[in-house]
Length: 101
Image 1 (cartoon, helix red, strand yellow):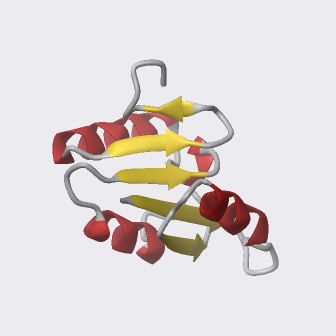
Image 2: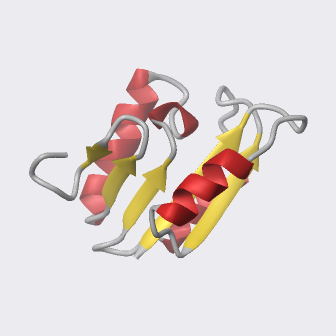
C-alpha cells in the first residue's frame, strides 16, 4: 500500500499541490500536518507511521516534508527500512523499493 504524507509550515499555506501529487502517485491514504519542520511533534506523520506495514511505501512530495534535518531524515529512513517499509520522494525521484531508486 502507498501511504502519503504532506506537510506545510503554516496554517496559511495550502496542501493542495502535495495532495494532488500524492493521489496521482497512487496513495490510498494521505496524512498531513500544518506545522514547522522544526517541530518534533507532528501528529500527521505519527499517524502515517502507525498505518505502515511491512511491504508498504511512505510517499512524500519532497524529502524536506518528512525530515527536520539530514540527520533526522537518515534516521527516519533507517526506521522505515527496519520496518520493511519503502520510502518514495516524488520530486527527488527517490524510491527505496526499486533498484534504480
